[in-house]
Image (cartoon, rainbow, N blue to C red; front, side):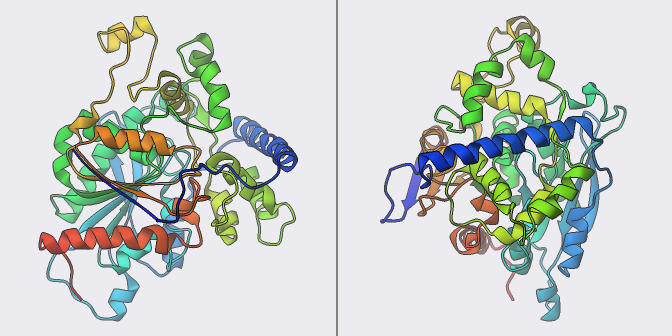
Length: 434
């Protein structure tokens, strides 16, 4: 086992939960609860918007080439993924490549989509920075989100479509998308980057199908989630009590579509989250409420774009599975109840994921003010992995969404990832030189 821990010398171990006074926090929380309730009601009553192609249009508008590909999973879900094969900056330099470009695959978090990696613009978004650095860039989309709301036989308006958790996203979706990207790129291995639930699906895939470790060069996991013993999001505490163990309630609320993009949502985004809106604080406050209170790093000019593309839809079973992890304290498969567990797993309790099967060295980036990915849980996970390199963000107020949309994400995260990938490719003679 090897664990490397890196942290600013000015950092302290005190966990930051915000600098607002208590009365202001309570008032803000009340408004945010109302905003969350409104979104839930809207998603339940209004037909989701179909056919959105925000990723493709954004990439095109940013003057990068884009390819749209369709991936079929073994259980017949139909996924849409995107490729940025090159960069206009490299084309302007008349760069020609005799060697194949190294491949990098990016996977989003829960209620998110491929848009995560591009809405920060050409100079800061990780996908564009990879393309500018000479990488063949692929952006994944998990089943049930805006771009992957299709199945060969099942209509998404039926509950059967939503009978999945992030376990299936890991062993079916992620495996299929990685294989597809490697086949089209004619490569044997790739670099992998993920955020939030995307990291969970990586742990699931590499634990369950360990031969996929051989298909990975370097791994970079932002705000990784596996163990959730120290999870601090307030709604998880309440949800854990209600849905963290198999019950009639979890059975009733499972296998439903959760928070797809709707037409009303897009209208609200334009009026509430726009730069000049007096209510813009609701949008940034909602991200703070979920991801970590009091961050100073969020790029507020992105709020309209974030709102128009998020939440991007998921299955309620994905949320319930996370609540089960919070309640059990273990990283394990979905708990269907003792009787069904005996049928599915041939044991009363769900089997734990064997993370020791993950033999590729995992770079994990984490922070003190992340309500979804607690410092203690990340560091505990690192003790179980055969090889882990930890980077603890030196800013104490850095939260869950700053890994994607902070004003200084390029300097804090992105450059570091690219340097590590480039060093690997130079060492293994797979780097592109200009």
